[in-house]
Image (tube, rainbow, N blue to C red; front, side, top):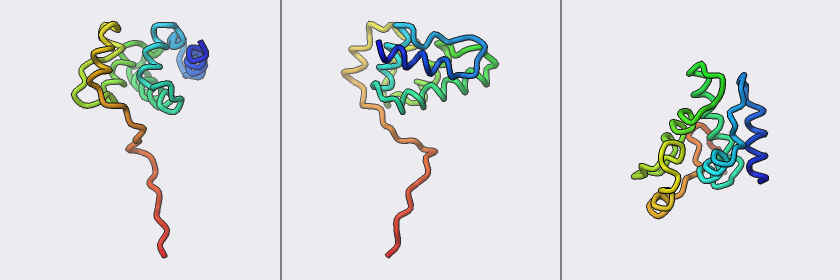
Length: 115
C-alpha cells in the first residue's frame, strides 16, 4: 500500500492537467516490478515517461508512455513489457531477464584525484 501512495505522490507532482492514476493497484504493481521498489529508479522511469507525455502533448502519462519508457531500459533479449503485455506472463520474463542496472549514461563522472 505504501508504494501505491508513493506512486500517487509522484503523480501529484507531475505537470499535467489530469492525474495519471499511477497509484492505481495495477499500475503501481507494474511500476514496482519495473523499478524493483527502488525510489531512484522509479523517479528516473517516471521522469522519462513524463517527458514522452509532454512531447506528445498529452494531458497525462498513459500506458503508451510507460511502455515506451520501459522499452528504453528493459534488459537485452527481453520482449516482455509490463505496460503492453499480459501481466500473467511476467513469470516467464523474470526467469529470462537480467536485472536492471542503475547506470545513468547522463550522470556526471567522478574525477579521480591525481597524486
